[in-house]
Image 1 (cartoon, rainbow, N blue to C red):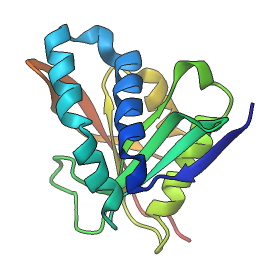
Image 2: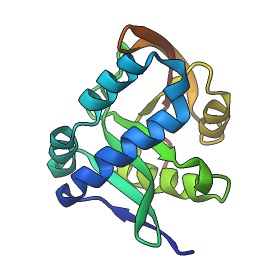
Image 3: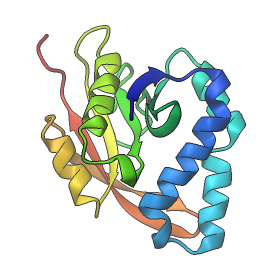
Image 4: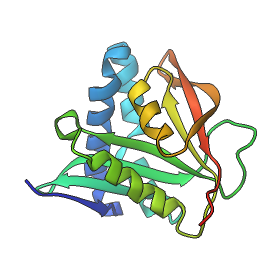
Length: 174
């Protein structure tokens, strides 16, 4: 079994769309009424939206592949979280998911480090992450990289509103 990480391109939009829907559903699907989940997946992970993100120079997405099949992804870009301290130039880890069957092998950390390296390619800057308030494992993982809670907001999935924590890491000396 060969695992690799590569930067996704606009040609990967359909693969990314399917993977996003699969990983979100595997991780959080049990929390939502089926119609709310389906509407969210169709909107948030639409192929055209993924293609636009993949083509935009301010965003980057990486695919974790096992023998050529996408099993995880990380997405980054300018910070869009609703926090008053977000400034122009701040970066955000927008998504980090690895299919359950491929977790606990260190690949999530490698994928995350790849994303962090890209976000800080031009030097240190403030980084942000939104994480579900009850995803304690993710919160512990991000804390190991220096991210601390800076706020919270409600994340809509259909009629459901999830309490999300906003995590921030100030620029680190290079």
